[in-house]
Image (tube, rainbow, N blue to C red; front, side, top):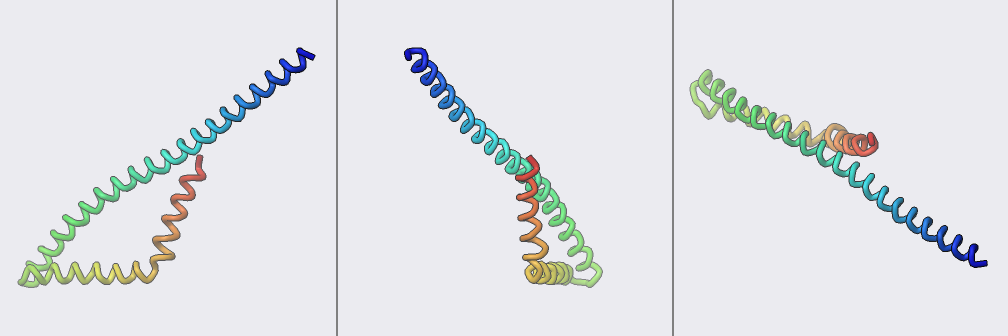
Length: 114
């Protein structure tokens, strides 16, 4: 009888340890996936920032060049601003198809790749 009690207590302790270990494993897997998604997004954000700075400087150059061709520097800036206004309107119209869906798919794909 004493052997059964020790055996049941031993099994209960092992089951409890298994449960705690399993919960810790799930936490670590979630942490790993979350950190992977965040680090990927951070690296992409850094690349996007560098590209945006490049585009900004390039646009200033284009605006100055167009302004010089047209005789007034501000004409070049108006043309570049108009181009981006047109691009902004087009992106706004198709935002759900082009932007929202792609960002959502990228995040879900990154999360499920683990």
